[in-house]
Length: 140
Image 1 (spheres, rainbow, N blue to C red):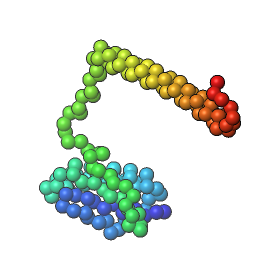
Image 2 (image 1 turned 135 degrees about the vertical axis):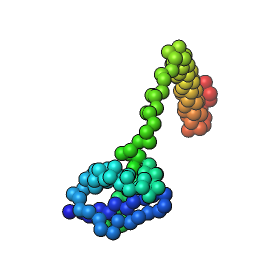
Image 3 (image 1 turned 30 degrees about the horizontal axis):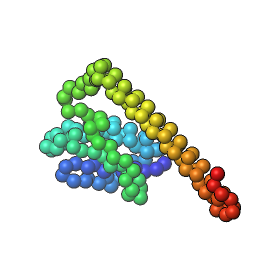
Image 4 (image 1 turned 60 degrees about the horizontal axis):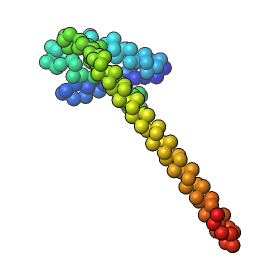
């Protein structure tokens, strides 16, 4: 079973986990970190450290950082959740839709003009190529 190390990152610095824990997967290690966060909060507050400023850095046995788990994923700061953004005024929304549709129509018209110009250039190029290929031929 893989061994994972849960280094504690605080505003004071990084506290390295020297023991590590065996977990079947990184997902299981992540869930263990999330389960441990509330238990550590009392200790951190007692030390004068703000828990929301902390995170676990989960590393493998080789010391490579695999994942950071901010304590804020499990905690909130006591404030009420923000209100979801208010949907735009229907009239303003419809005006934006109309504006978008007008831009699309203008782009389609420009594309059609460009295609027509390209077709005309192809025809002139073919005509010029035929004159070069047959120098005795006159324009007609």
